[in-house]
Length: 146
Image (cartoon, rainbow, N blue to C red; front, side, top):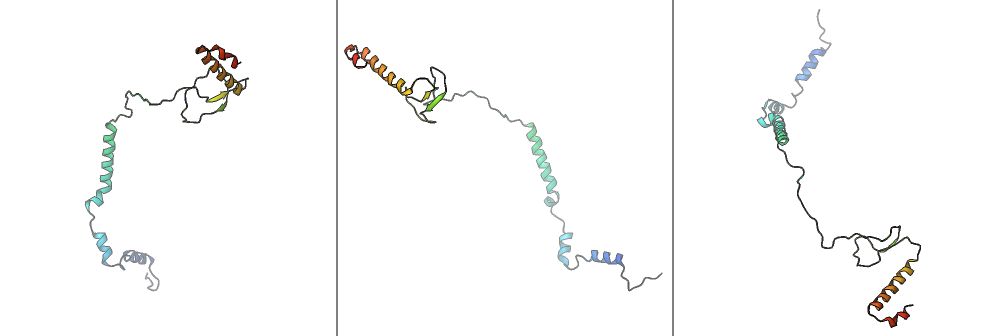
């Protein structure tokens, strides 16, 4: 059986195209393909993996303390002091702001009460004046306070 020369042979044509793919580029491609790569390029990935595995293994066996326990005392020149009330109740009005410096006997706020806060403060100041009069033994001035 003879082959007709007018009908292209598909098997031979595909092989010819595969062999001739790099033919257009000439010797440049042949030089790149035939050139042997340097050692570090060929074995670099494996070498890097071995180094990382070695570092991981060494770091597994070397223990480093996570917590260092020590004794310390934290002090401040002007440490915050607690505010202690005589009675308990709801805070109605607050006069001091956050991180504000306050003085001794300064009114910081009002606690819920049945009395008027202004009258209580007025009575307190009158009692302080009476106490100072009694301490100085000037009882003749006492009738002015009543």
